[in-house]
Every structure is written in C-alpha cells, then in structure tokens.
Image (cartoon, rainbow over all chains, first blue to last red; front, side):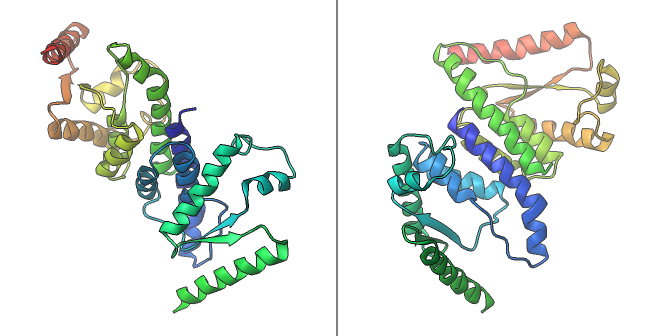
Length: 148
Length: 148
C-alpha cells in the first residue's frame, strides 16, 4: 500500500471517530482517552515511513478540524524489550525489521522533544506499578493545570 | 459517514492510484486520463458537502504530492437533464435531493471560473457528437500548448 494511502486511511477513521464519539463526549464535558491519535500517524508514516512529518501534521490537523489532545503519553521502552514483552502475534507494523522499530521510537522521542507541553515520555521499562505511578502523576498535573 | 471521513477515503484511494498507476504512466511519458480527481472531492464534500473547499485543496494537494491534472473537463448540463439522462439506478450522491445536485453543479462552475487555465466547462446539453467535438477541441488545444 502507498504510504500516503495508509496515512489517509488512518486519518479517515480518526475523522469518523471524532465526529461520532469524541466531539459528543467533549460537548458533554467528559474526559476522552484514546489509544493513538494523529501523533502515531506522524511517527509511523512520517518519521519511520518516509513521509514529511510536517505535512502529516498539517493534513491531519485540518482533517481533525483542529482538534488536538491536551496530553499525549508515549510509553517508551528499548525496541528489543518491546518485542520481548509482546504476548501475541506481531501486527503488520510490529513485524517490520528492527531498524523500522528504531525509527518509530526515535520519531516519538523527537516529537516529544519538539512539543514537551503536549507530549510526555513515560519510561515504561520498569514494573507495571512504576509505569502506572508515572502516568498518574502526568495526568494529575495536566488535569489540575486545566482546572486553573 | 462524517464528511471529512468520506473526503479522506476518496483521497486515500487517489493516493494509491497515483503511486500504483499514474506516476509510473507519467514516467513512461504516457497521457493519463482519469474519471474524476481532487476537483470532485473539493466540489462534492466541499461546495456541496459543507467542508471548506480551500482546506480540501490544501489537504488533497499535499496527499497527491503536488500532482495535478493539466486539464480538467467539466461536462455541464442542467441538474434536471442529468437526472433524466441517467440510464441506471442513482448512486448515493445522485440520489440526494435536487438542491444538493444544484450545489454540486454550482461548485464545479465556481472552481472552473477560479481556474480557467486548468478547468474547462463543456456544454454537454447537446448531442454526443456535439459534446465530443467540444472535448476534442479543448484537448487538442491543451496538447499543442504542452508541445510548445
């Protein structure tokens, strides 16, 4: 599949999710938690897939009518550890070679470095309790900042 | 379906068509003729569907890596005539109400007025021979302009 085709399919599914689920939930004043959003497309099809990350941000922002997460958490582990931890068959991205996985990781870290206010890296190499603690801290900080 | 979802699905299919068919054909110096391209998305999901036509142009141009037809021909007939001529069941766009069809027509005419160098309106109310003659003329002019 052409990489732009893949990127646009992810964006199409996200546009539908926004219209059907996310906008109504935000309108009802709910907190919305999603597993992956535009950042993933910027990293997988951009940094790792060869498209221009800035073009993906531009297209994705317009397609999402400017809707953007207040906070994205990147659960970071070394590539080898992430493979070793997987307890199910690899999907079509996970089954790509290690250098692709390394570009994915570097892409997430690069985007987090560019936008530290919106993207936070959580060290996920430790225990479940340790990771959970770090996530709680980051989310609590974000929520109290929103309250002010 | 959310209109942005629909627009992005059309763009995804077009990105694949570009990578798989159009770019190789252009590289082999062939003339490429397609039935509909980005202009249709700008009109159906933009002018008629409520999205911003300029946003659709921007997103679509990036997604097509800047590839744009040298010439688009709009075969124009009054909305009522187009319905009367149809000799098969209406698709999901054709079965929408007349005011939607009218916005589609006005959208095509507005885009042609904005970009007369690239989009030409062909009066298609006449006979097949008449329409074919007008198309031949427009295409011949375009091809000889390219040769120079």
